[in-house]
Amino acid sequence: MMMFCPKCGSILMPKKVDKKTVMSCSCGYSNKKSEKIEIKEEIKDKIEIEAVEEEYEVHPLTDAECPKCGHDKAYYWEVQTRASDEPATKFLKCEKCRHIWRDYK
Image 1: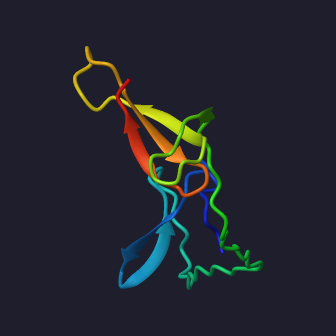
Image 2: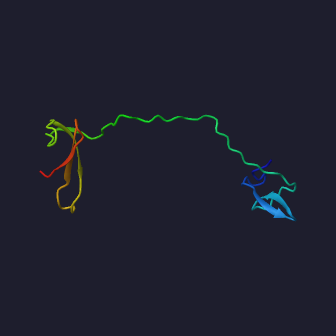
Image 3: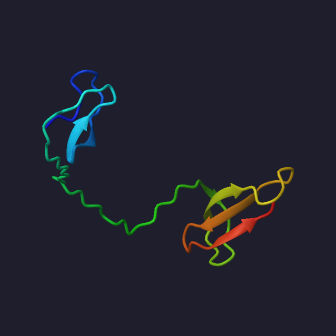
């Protein structure tokens, strides 16, 4: 089975000629004999993905007292929630109980 043109190297495309399907190229080359073309895909190796039960924090840790449980460490990040000339809002998430609150200071 030929998939590429022997003249120019382009990919051959199916074309109907006299009720037959032949493979032809835009350069004028045409494979005169009719071929049955079959495309197969085979998956050899399956990769299993494990679910992670534990949640990992990517934010930095700082000293801040949680208003819910009183723990003294929290993760923090900043988001521009108002106009660009206003300061960003600081969000904190308790390391222990995962409570989230805002710090407007």
